[in-house]
Length: 525
Image 1 (cartoon, rainbow, N blue to C red):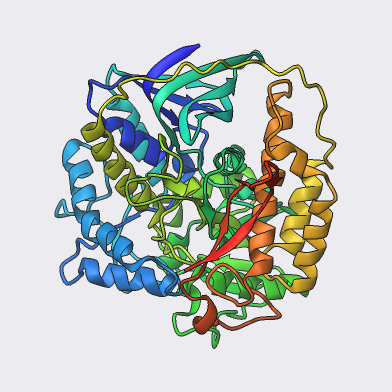
Image 2: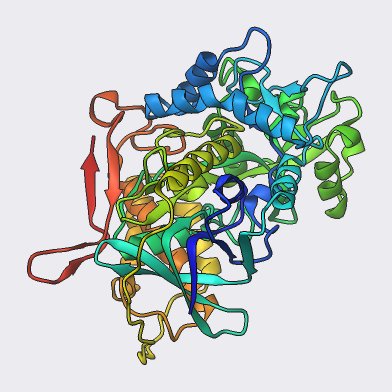
């Protein structure tokens, strides 16, 4: 049994921003599922959006974010973030975080899809996430400890208050960690799909943890599919950043046909869901799409990480054509919070991709993810610094279960393929109903609150992926329109009258007779 003032589950940008900004009087413990540099933040090729160029304005950034989000965003939250973005970037830069500069020593600003101005700050060309994580790690103080390869599998509750977590240690044994403040910073759930840009650790753990604990989740149907993942030998091999198209690359067939001509006024820089759907239509017909990078001078120097990725998988960027396919990239929904990361459970917080703040709406604007993580992480730090350490924690007797039943679930690759085929880029009532029926017959309800103490980390991880897939599928079936990252072929248009600001809420609730209703959904405005 271990104690801390603040437990942070995860080690990405949001987690590290929070840790760095917490007062040094707090005892902080970071628990990370894998090695601390194996998450999505460290892999992030794209940059951070901020209106710092002459002629740009946070209000223009705000408008672009609303447009990309199909106006499903919480507008006030968006404006707060875009107004705070310049100061966040300048603060990091002045503190010594390395960002790319021009010959005059000013920040070099790139363009990405759906932005109206050059406002993307990069570091190391296409290694922004790595450089920022390394900088934040190097600045952690002695009051912060890190335990790696610790898999959190349950939130410990005292009524509606979270007071700690249960976790699996590397040797398979269980450990209990207590804290007055528990922060989910576990990232997204891209790995529930067969094609994804996400790190192997992004399996929806935080969403499943929160759901099992009874927290509210929202907007799980909104999954962003990145248009350009390197596609070799039938598998996705990594991300080819949107910044490549921002620098002039175009999407073409093997014969050179430009596939985005006549599809959208922004052509290859159209919002991601439009580009993804266009590539998907070609792939269904058996046509491989390529990213033509021949117009980008010094491509290898400008994008060293992507060049290395291509070389490792036998693609010669000097020939100018990179084979690509869309794949899951980011989820706009998650554990419902306010702008301080506060959830519906006292003492439980969520930041980063695991959280739903309303900022991204139905489709995240490029390079707003690292920004949102830093923005909300900083807000939560300010709130916790004011709140301080919890005065006392209740003594909760944690008894290890002797229950030895094990979930009998199909191989995880079957789930991933079915999610891609049936709850993927293009959805219909038939496909979603078929996926829901398949998930319903697996007996998952039993495991929404059963003890997991006796299961292995691999078994629990698999279960969490299935729970998260259930929420995505049910939400996608419920929303009878197309908006942002959610595209219904049977409801191809936005329905602003019925759906623009309405959320689908997931929460496991106890009903009056003492029984539980699982995967209960509600519509909220």
